[in-house]
Length: 186
Image 1: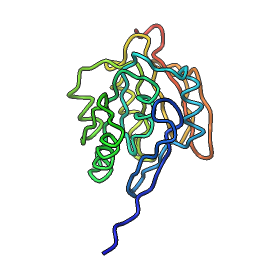
Image 2: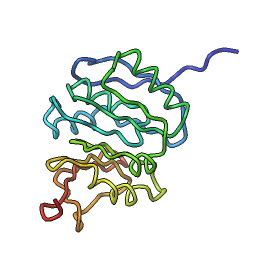
Image 3: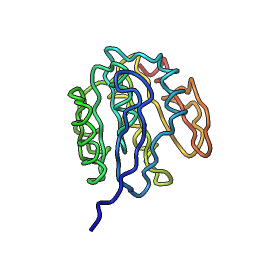
Image 4: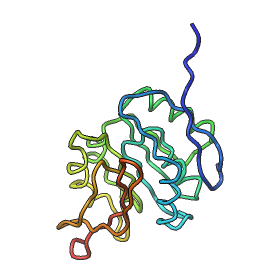
């Protein structure tokens, strides 16, 4: 039986610029498009030196590996789907991404058990399953004082009692945002 061909996605910039990450087909898996990642890292300032990052619902891991490629100190990548997790481990090995911690677990379980603080949290949950509100409610206790959260969603976010949207855009059917804790919630 022939081996099934894997999909690929390219890292935009940094140490691993133009390197391809391989990943299997999986239900709901939507790699963040290259031009969206370019915009997000422009928003974040390109160089993430010293930043501790969390990539929840990591999928291909491209946004987390891209953060490491741009000098992030560390990235925790959380992915529940076993086949996708295994592909991320292969990519971590290929890149020699020692500063990546790749975990095969549910995002909410991770948030309940983990006590780390992060400077940048990337959140791209499955659409139409009610994940976003549950996850956003848990993130304040995981975010450093000046930290930001990148969110992809099937709808536009608005400011609320906890979060302030300070950058947002849309590509196709994807709304993407940078949000931070409101000043009065720190």
